[in-house]
Image (cartoon, rainbow, N blue to C red; front, side):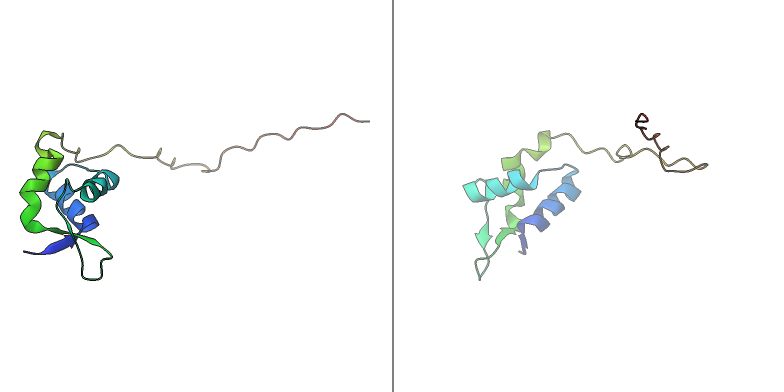
Length: 98
């Protein structure tokens, strides 16, 4: 079967199972041996074999994780349609006359 880099396999898992697993937690699992992986020929990347998917799903306990909601709340307030989008300027402090 095909072998994928860690980031690509993690993206595949998130899309297939609808859960978000942090990259750090997944990578620590690779380094600790909890998640089966092998090095590429140049030993610069960890690769995950697609055949190991069932073992990885079990190791991460993805079946018990709640799915990610399809829609997320907006990150910022919407911009008003009328008027300036800049906040009002504060009046400057004045010095008393000497």
